[in-house]
Image (cartoon, rainbow, N blue to C red):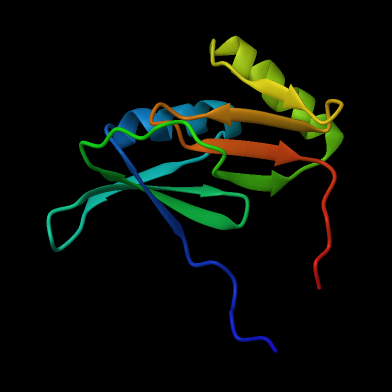
Length: 121
């Protein structure tokens, strides 16, 4: 039963949306769009793959957990991203015999790049 369409966006709270957007721009050449909504929320939008992320400014502290967002990518993309992370001095970690790469933003949101997808139809 197809009840859901594609993702509209994923919203994550961060202390500095511009800094977080700059991180993803540096890694993925993603363009950031900043706006303030009708309620005065400072938001920065970035498209990563087919998903729009919105970073909403909030003074929050988040522990590093196993929660993460994963993107399916080619093996060559894994190595290109690792090279970019090295170039900007950002930490990352290889996993699963170098078929996955993990990194976090400045607010402990974890992102995974994975080249071994699992179907769950």
